[in-house]
Length: 228
Image (cartoon, rainbow, N blue to C red; front, side, top):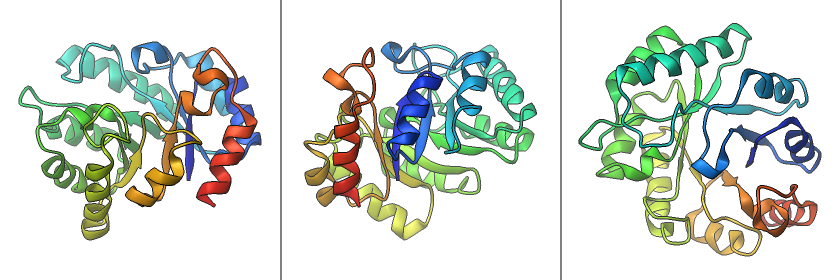
């Protein structure tokens, strides 16, 4: 499974044609990815057949959300749900850097069909093994965790990612989706070390490593050949 970040329908169509198997749709990638507009979402969904996970993140200043933030997030999710779309990317922490399970409980009561990627808020938790066990209780809805192993990128977090993949096999909770700093030059080495089933790519599949550029066919094909 190869997942790529996209911000518009052109990127989405290009990614699908090149064999990408899932998309993460965001806006404001320079801020780490925020909730896209309705128009952007609609145009992307109408353009592709592959799964699209939609970022639900109201701002870029941390992952500890107040009640107003949570209501905004729920309204965005409700809009998607009304259109028959239940795939989202979301994450929330408590002040003590544990998983905000109260918010997740509320979310899944209201939206029981959600297919969730818990995003890199996971990289800021106080203990990733503890956090994984918390998220495993939501395996019905939380299907994967996007993480770099608690480090800035997957190369630095490879050891932790390998342990998380082993924990996934043991607990059969959310899949581990390594992301950050992955590219065609390092994916073979990192896959050998991590042994995940799916990987998340951003600027690493772009021309000149830039989101201002289009997705690079050669890079995507190289990654596909390496991952089989």
